[in-house]
Picture 1 (cartoon, rainbow, N blue to C red):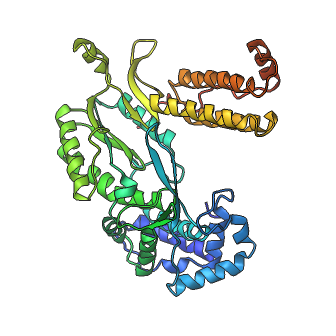
Picture 2 (picture 1 turned 120 degrees about the vertical axis):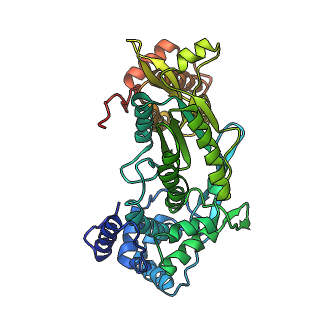
Picture 3 (picture 1 turned 120 degrees about the horizontal axis):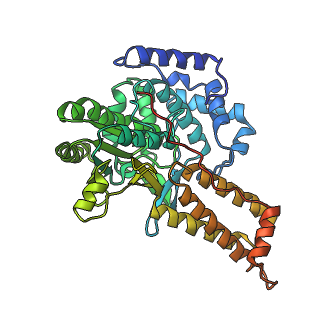
Length: 444
């Protein structure tokens, strides 16, 4: 969110938003001039001051000591088209037991300009984006898309799920195809060239500069917006205008960033959509992951059909949850969900590793605060309807490993469960609770 909404630049952005809303075909030719000192100061203030530094090694505080001077110089370079983004510093974070996810850490000045470009693009494309898109958008989040998916399966004639995984989307999306998508709405060559510079800035991996004609840097501020623009045209709009007009029954798509699920009524339609997705992404130089994409039966008749066919009822994973067909106490169909096995195992390993490392580094009262924050964060994300047992299970696991590592701090007498329970009475940890309820009937 901008820090000042009365400045001239923000007034212009508001006008741009109104124009974009009124005329979906309008092309904007003058946008780069909005990147002025006043605007970029707000961009700087919006940044997380505790984030890791890029290869320039400049922190938020250090840049701010001469903020006006730095911003005047930055704007000068932008106006003279001499600004050149610094390559990101690549690090790797765990994705699964065997995989790691690459992450790019941008230089501070890169982040300021990226934030400015993102807000400009947002003022235009938020008027275009469809309701099926939830990732990295204002006032939208992953729990809303989970509830929408729940409501579609519960209240619409859904019998099949098409789940598709784009293979290495952020690493393989074509710069040329991406820029073609942006040019549909934007004709300002200065801004377009600036975006291309960020795409081609590359990253430094183990001291080696790597540049590519494909991919958007994961971890950058600009990357999610560019991904949403690309997928808006390649997937969302195509599904809305082409797919829905060619199927026989109900179908809908929900998307969070590059993760999406299609809900479909008829089996023949589901097969057509599955083939259509493969062809569509192949056309844009992307590939649907063969082992992570499926077309399955799922819905109110799935459990009965599975019993008749002597097989297990189908389930699918989306945004860290395994979705399955369940029954209410009255015997009615409902969608069940639980923390996916991979995510649960990863969270347990991470908690155990952290406790083992931290227990002797600082005093207990210090790391206890962090432990409470970790638990609150877990319940905040995974505390959704039908997953109470899942978060209780993680809570109990955490208590076991906390006691285990507290007992291994020294050769002192082991803390029994009775003593540990008394300790928790004095220093309580957050208890599991459902934070997000999906049982409010939708208004349709």
